[in-house]
Amino acid sequence: MLLALDEGTTSTRAVVLDDAGEFLATSTHEITQHYPQPGWVEHDAAEIWQRTQAAITAALNAAGAGPGDISAIGITNQRETVVVWDPATGQPLAPAIVWQDRRTALRCEQLTAAGHEPLVRLRTGLTLDPYFSATKIEWMLANVEGLSQRAHSGRAVFGTIDSWLIFCLTGEHATDPSNASRTLLYDIIDGSWSPTLCDLFGVPIQALPEVRPSCGVMGTVRAAGLEVLHGVAVAGVAGDQQAALFGQACLRSGEAKQTYGTGAFLVVNAGGLPPPSPAGLLASIAWQVGSKVTYALEASMFVAGAAIQWLRDELQIIESAADSEALAASLSDNGGVYFVPALTGLGSPYFDPYARGTIVGLTRGCGRAHFARATLEAIAYQTVDAVRAVEGARGEDLAELRADGGAVHNGFLMQFQADVLGIPVVVGEVTETTVFGAAALAAVATGLWTLDQVGRSWQESRSYEPAMTSDQREALLADWERAVQRSRGWARK
Ligand code: ADP
Image 1 (cartoon, rainbow, N blue to C red):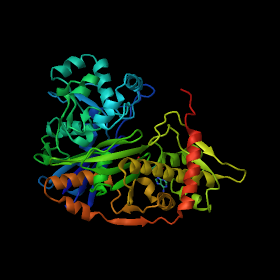
Image 2 (tube, rainbow, N blue to C red):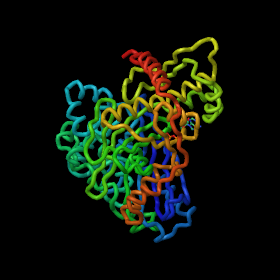
Image 3 (tube, helix red, strand yellow):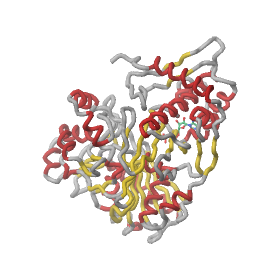
Image 4 (cartoon, rainbow, N blue to C red):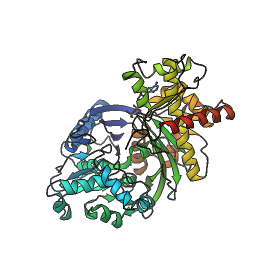
């Protein structure tokens, strides 16, 4: 059996799988969200570890797994979030700063104004944004009393959530390249922490974890309280989006997945060389197997399923997310109504924090159905923008898009997506691709599965074939583009 841990933003989950990859048991425990000030989001790292232990114990019990039954552990996690702890006691030294936290926005603007963006983009594939870890660590060092001294003398260490869990489980201070490549401190071309970037953000390089392959042994469990797992290797680690790419078996260059969740994340396997990462897209490392690094190109859409939640909770024009499907399908077309769901600004490829939600084309005959349809169409149009940006950057078109996340249950959305993309959209049998990806990395690392087997074991559940003429597609996309222009720059600075 395999154990996979998925430490997300709102919950931590443990899943036990059999050797063939079938899910045997799952246990999910919530994580408390702390919002000490507007724009700040924190987690308690000690709580994360406690709840993860509880999830592990419950999942092992439910699966009837005893000592010797688990052959390897995989970890996937919310990315960018920073934990700081004392390596001697294992005690966190400050609240963890979560990826959503915006407290370093001004600092990022200053660094951009000072001209650091081109170097950062070249070496890390990322952009100067509070989202990533480096300015969060810089903030901790400047604001947590005594931390800077401790970090310089080996009495405080930093890590992303994977690194924290690896430490708690095994006592090793390690991470993998997919997580390291989201910190703004890791040089994705050289494949190592960058002394130049550590200097820029004032981060003592010795306080960062050792970077080890995503697929390989990070350490073996020796945590008190988890005796049943003692000696089991943590052997697969990847950030959530990269793990989903692996779980969708997008193992060859040019294969891509889109996760339709609260937001949506498009990730394409970019092969063995660092891809160009033009503004509006992010390059990172997908995974490292042995010494072989695979890169990824990523586009993020901030609002996808969240717009459906907005229809349900704020507008109250649907009772459940699933109702949006029949409502949208009750119309033969969108009636010229477009909704740009820029409720928190626009993500890839625009990255416009000043864009706001905009609905255009309303006429007297419009009603709930138009809102539902425009919202689902918008999720698909945003995906087309992201796919075209990725295709433009790579100079190669996608052959198909593998889809996962909660909104893949919406048949209208999936069919419309295939229509406006002009390529098949394929939903796999495994819907829990993130946690499956972590388990698969661990299974490959311990020789239980081969990489080829991961590729071959992927099974299609449903394929949506494009059925729209290209004239019709381009006319819709042209109007969507006009709507996007109207949403941009709306909020005042
Ligand atoms: P996350 O992991 O981001 O919490 P999930 O993958 O669980 O998200 O997906 C939940 C999202 O999917 C919600 O935002 C919800 O509105 C949306 N969703 C779920 N079912 C449907 C559906 N049938 N049609 C459209 N959206 C849906």
